[in-house]
Image 1 (cartoon, rainbow, N blue to C red):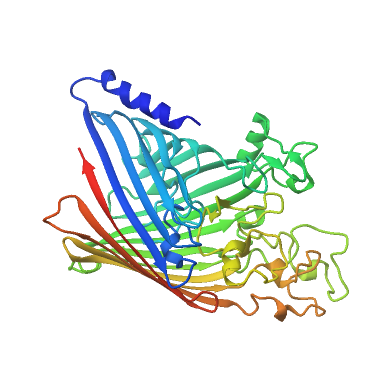
Image 2 (tube, rainbow, N blue to C red; image 1 turned 90 degrees about the vertical axis):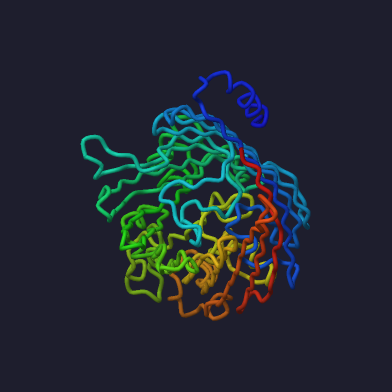
Length: 505
């Protein structure tokens, strides 16, 4: 993808395309950051939800050069682009393009191509642990996106009904189990209420990984007609692998529900993200699995606290421990009923897929919540643990509490504080000691107490982040972050320090 060349041509040619009344804005930023820790592996909040820039396996020395350029034409039309370059010294040293994109806007329609740090669907606070769909946990996927990024009035509703959405096609890397797969994602949300002070919204975000080259099945279906099947989660065509009978590709989705309200000086956001990976979860057979959140901006008259947030993540049910589909031996001797009395459609196994074994991840990081544990993370504790599964995410049955607060100590000194508590229960397959033909923990011959995640592993993650601007030094911001992990898995502390210089024109 020759994105830098395309971007350069766009930047050189665009000034001649507009009238004198156009406005030009150029932004540039240079940052230098370093992380160290009491152990080789870096603390959780030093490396997660940072767009995949930091290596969690060692100390980091990172330099980031960020530039963007935009021309506005009376807000009707704009064109621009940006490029971020990262040079990182670590155990996995690398120099690469973190962002590289061109974009254009015509009215309320927005187009972008390349790799850009942005999230679609409902925008959550920067205090959030992250969307269950696509968050800021991994480096951005290169893709083409057509979107209505902000809520826009539905005609003839006098502003009381608004909509937003996006439609995207992206390309994954060749280091995955299924190489060179595609990713399709889209969202659509509606919001009611207008400017009366309270708004309610509802919508859907859908992500599908499809196509690619499997080491078992070879080239997977990837024609235009296959793409149309992926869009609507339809079964694969004749000749598709058996595990693409239900739906072509690997699908993850989120139903969004929320209320936003203005109460005096404060703004409140109450939301629920319902996670699903198949038809049973889509129809709420996985009960209330998902992410619940409550955020309040300006809760106090003072700026010492400008926002507080609490999130509760529960992903234990997964449509139950029963089998997803009927099998020949689905009435073993220890059960009196088929599937042990559970409805078919169980074991949703969020973020995991038996064909796309790299799961809902990109370049080693979860595409969604960072609270689902990967095999790579568990290996940092003990690489010899038997999880009885080849799944990428070894613990997706979790209960998590996340509390965050931010504010201003002075006008030039800001802080952000996290406290997160997670209980990792592993997966249904692991709990059943890898016996995929049986039903959770109901087989009396299986001693599930030998399973590492039974009982659950408990873990705390803390973070205090500050930024400080000195009046006598223009455009320079100093950064520091202290992170501490404490629990049954990880016990370490880490520090990130650095500075950034902004040049905006």
